[in-house]
Length: 387
Image (cartoon, rainbow, N blue to C red):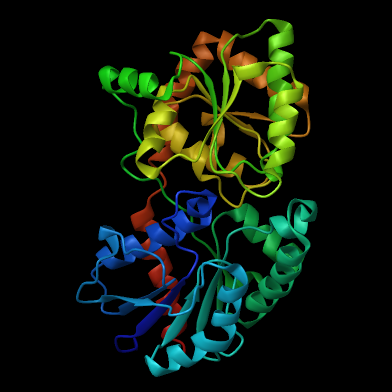
């Protein structure tokens, strides 16, 4: 027999509206989860616990079954956030009469002993430890293992990550549920050539260019992408610029320095953080989207590029083949030559390029944030109904 309506808490401390890399992947996952849970006609009440300094987006305005709670501590600081989550949050949850807690980004408070769900977005810190500061790596190793052991259900955002959680954390397979991310309707091929021309002019962009969009950090394999681009220039295969767009993350200095050492000058550009409302324009304006990341829990940027009809060259590792299928050119991210060859194929093979342009939006239609929220809510109910 189904349980009565529940109060479900979502720890949204990592939701960010800052104009920096903090507003990238994990924050967008939390935002879209909350946005769609708010719209669902559910019997349950959703309580979203945000950091105190976050302005509430209009998409998250409270309604009859969706409420916002804001932390009084300065939880934008990672150390303060962890302390608040572990020391204060459990007491707040008990005070608010919460039935179930969802930790959507790898963590749960030890002081919460009620029903819980945790989302493990990826295990990069285990597979690529050098890409993280020691303190972050140490905390994540401990917290994710603990959360996976304590949670009633573990959500992963791809089958690839699900297999990693089974293999690396020893979590029983029957406790892990795969729930894919989605693509916003705003990501679609643009028919407005005037808007794109004005955008290129405003951003000082040429009519054609190779784009990467994401956080500027070592684990995105940008040094090899830069070397692959330099190889293409040596081959005289292209004179299009390489645009590496996105907020600066940890370890970005090495990437900027490496780009300078190629001697290619402003053929390699770093325009900085891209506001949310500009992202579809960047994809649509680009000739090719290159994303040779060595590891992804899901891979939102290349899927969004597909949705915009932009040909994608991406890594053949982790979740990317699962998400992108045959709608992208997949390459070995450990090989500079393979990355260069993949980009050159798209540049020179008109039939391939046309197939990717046509097939990308169809592939992206299979991923929906609304379905993600529905499946996540079903996970909540499966736990609640068995208590």
